Image (cartoon, rainbow over the protein chains, first blue to last red):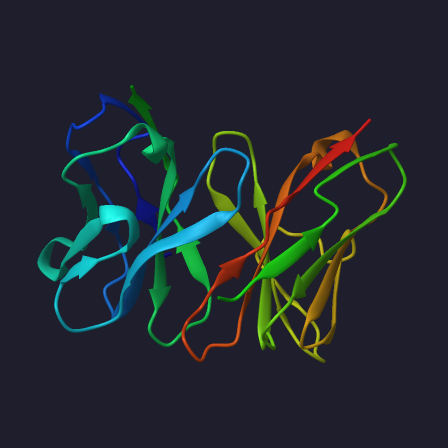
Length: 113
Length: 115
């Protein structure tokens, strides 16, 4: 079965530090990849997505992610975090021929001011 | 942008009663809606996929008679938790898409507490 792994469950860092969250998936076919963010008390919001083309994808709020097909990875990065980036981040995978998102376990990020 | 409205945001019900949760796409027609369940500190688990005008497709292990899904129009899907028990207490989230832009838009979720 297809699975999505986020290896970091909790991340604590200070403002201005760099952030990288790992995401690996197990499906071998063509996939579309997503990162969502869930701020405290709010709904999931799309940060960025990859369908095809340039494997380095830029999203909102200064986030970017790199698709490395050979590693089945889609890691999320931000060079300098802010306190407002405190949230839970979810990686999700969609099979190209399917319609169901499979989510990773999520990573809680706490940015200390 | 696309907006999905989910109501109620919180509900407390007695064990044995039924609860209905609504999911509405406000500014687009949702070909498909999805219902997820999120346990504390865990990820979203897909419960079922709902297509307008047809029966929902349930994921393995999800009781279709307990979690009734109706998708009567392109803008509304409902999830009814029947004969609720305390173990049904959870955070339920809906998502809607029109597949034109792969826009999986999420509702704000419903916190169900069964006492």
